[in-house]
Image (tube, rainbow, N blue to C red; front, side, top):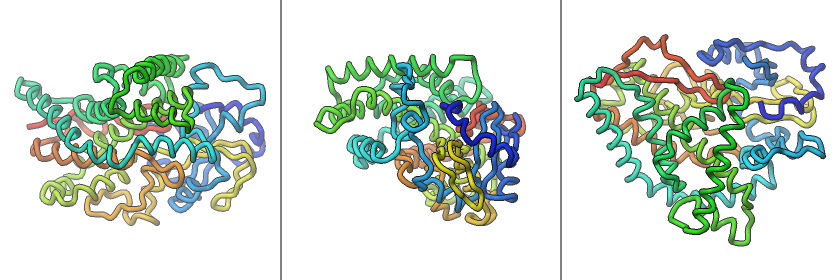
Length: 415
C-alpha cells in the first residue's frame, strides 16, 4: 500500500483492538470475507494478504458516508510524508492525479479534466464503440469458423474493447495496447517481482512524456491535446499533473470496464434464467448494466483513504494516521440496501450502487463505462446465442490484487 511506512503513529493502539488476517483465498472470494465482516460490524481492522494493515468498512450506509467524509483523506504525498521527503521522479510525476488529492487541489484538477472529458465527447463515441465491438466479434467468429473450440473472452473481447476506446480517446496508437496491459497489471497487482511497479511506472512516465511533447507540437482532436489546451490556457495543469492525469485516465479507463464485461459475462452464464430474461427483453439492458456493476464489483474497494485524527465510523474509532478501505463491493452486497443482494436480478433497480464510488471522487468515466457495457453485452448476446462457459466456474482464477477484482481468463464456447 502506498507509503504505508508513514503510518506508524497509532499502530500499537490499533493492534490491541485485534486484527483479522485476510488469507490468500481472499483474492478468489472476497465477498465471503465481506459477508462475515458485515454480520459482525460495519468496520473491521484487517491485515491484507501481503501484510499491509488497514480498516475495512463493509456496510452500505457506512461505506457511502465514508466516501463523502472529509475526515478521510487521499493526499498522502502532502499529508503523510516528512517535510524533507523528496519523491523520485516516477513517484512525483504519477502520484498527483485526482484520486490522490483533496480539495482545493482536487476541485481544481477535476474542473480542468472535466473541460476535456465532456458529455458531448463521450456521447459521440457510441458509433465508434459499436464499430470496435463489431470488429472484435467478427474476429472471434472467424476464429471459431477456423476450428477453434474455445476462446478466451477476456483476451479477445473484454480487454481490447475498452483499451481501444480509451487509447483512441486519448490519442494513443492502437499498436501500444499490449504494453499498456502489462504496465497496468503491474501497477494494480498486490504482488509481483521486486521493482515491477516502479519499472511499469517509469515506462509509462517515459511514454507519456514523449506523447505530450508530440501532441504539443501537433495537436489533434483527442483528450491529450484537450488537456494540454486546458493547461496552457492560463489555468494550471502543469507538466507533472498532466502526465499523472494521463496515467490515471488510461488505467481507470479500461480496468473497470474490462472487468465489468468479463465478470458480467461470467455472472450471466452462471445465472441462465437471468441470461434468458435479458435475451428476451433487450429493453432491460441499460438497467442490467448497473445491476452487473453492483453484482460483480470490478473493484473490491475504493482507492485508499487515511485518517489524520481519530475518526469514529459506525461506532468504531479509527486512530490517527491509519489506512481506511471503503469496500464498495461489500456495500453493493449489503442486504440492508439491496434485498437478496447475492442474487443477480437483471430487472432490479440497482440505483445507488457504489461501484463508481460516491462523493467528490465519483468516477468521471462512469458514463463511458455504462456506454461500453451496454454496447458490449447487447452485441455479444445477440451475435452468439449459444455462448457458454468452456470450463467449470470453480476452476477460474482471479487476479491477485487488493484493489481490482478481475478474472485472469474466461474460456467460452460460442456454438
